[in-house]
Image 1 (cartoon, rainbow, N blue to C red):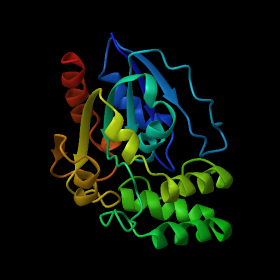
Image 2 (image 1 turned 90 degrees about the vertical axis):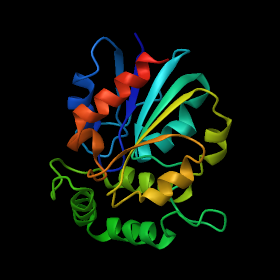
Image 3 (image 1 turned 90 degrees about the horizontal axis):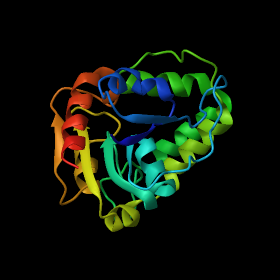
Image 4 (image 1 turned 120 degrees about the vertical axis):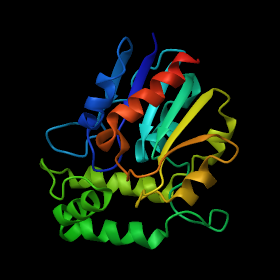
Length: 213
C-alpha cells in the first residue's frame, strides 16, 4: 500500500481528485488544499513519510517540486510541467505576458479571470464557490516565477507523466520539453483537467504505475 499525496492546480480544489481517487483502492491518501477558495484554507505542508508517492496536477505538480520532493519515492505528473513561463532557455513555455494579464485582471474582476480560465480548461464556466483573490494572486506568481527543472533533474525516483494532446493550458511541446528523456502517457482527446474529465483513465494508468514500484 502506498501513501499518495495529491495536490490540485490553480483555481481548483481537492475535489478535483474525488473520482480518480475512488479508483485507487487500497492506498492511504492525503489531499492538500492550496486555499484558492474561501470555504477552504491553505494547509501546511504535511509531514511526508519516507517513500510517499506525490500526485500533482498542473501547478500542483510544480508546487510539489518546490515543497515535498526530498522524501518522495515516486511522482505522478498530470497535465504537469517543470517551468511554466518562457525564458531565454525555455522557449516552449507560456509567455510571461499571459500571467501578467491574469494578475492585472485579478485586481479588477477576479471572478471573470477564474471563469475565463476554467472555461478554457474545459470545466465549469463559473466558479462554484467564493474565490480567495490573494491566494489566487500568489498562485499566479508561482506559475510566473518558479523553475523546478533542476529539482526534477535531480530526482532519481520513479516517474509517470499523464498528459493531453489537446491541452489548451500546457501544450504538448511544453510537456515534452519538461520531461525530456521520460516516457509520457498521452491521452489523444482530453484537455487540461484529466483527473476530472477522465478519472478512470488516470486511475488505471496510476494503478499500473504503482503496481510496478
